[in-house]
Length: 166
Image 1 (tube, rainbow, N blue to C red):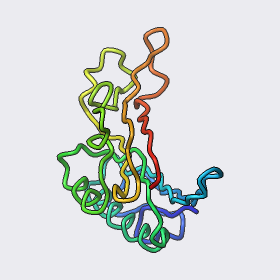
Image 2 (image 1 turned 30 degrees about the horizontal axis):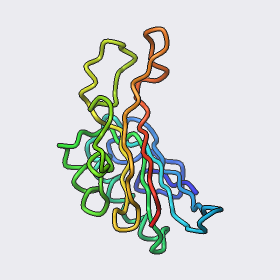
Image 3 (image 1 turned 60 degrees about the horizontal axis):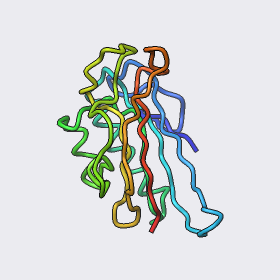
Image 4 (image 1 turned 90 degrees about the vertical axis):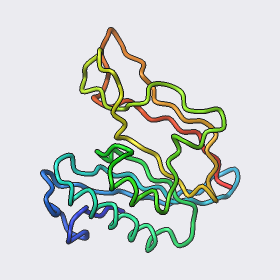
C-alpha cells in the first residue's frame, strides 16, 4: 500500500509546509525458507518543510501501528534529516537506527548525501534504515561509496543493511 505524508494521507496530497508531495509505500513480506513475516515501509520525507518532516514522522509511526499488526518492522528511506534533528528523535522513540547496531560496526563514510559531487566530504547522513530491534537483528551496515569513472549513480549513497528477522 501507499499513503501520502499529509493531513489527508489516503489521497494524493501535499502536506503541511512541504515543497513536494511525499509518500510512504509499504508491503508485508514472508520469507520462503523460514516462513517468518515482516513489514517494510519505505518513505521520502520533504527536504524543505520542518513541520512536514516532524508530522510525517508522527504519521508514519501511527500508520505502522495500524498496519504492522505486531509484526517485525523495517523502515527505510530518504528522511532529509540529520541524526541531531528533532524528527530523528520521533522515529527513534520507537525504532532503532541500524547504523549503530551492527556487531562489526558501520562500514564506509558517515554521510549518505553527495549531491553528485565526487569530492563531497560525505558527512551528511540523511538516509536510514530503522528496525524493531527486539525482533530484527542487524548483522551488517554500510554506506556504499563506489563510483564509476568518478561519478556517483545517484545524489545519495546506497545504504546496505543485512538483517535477520528473529
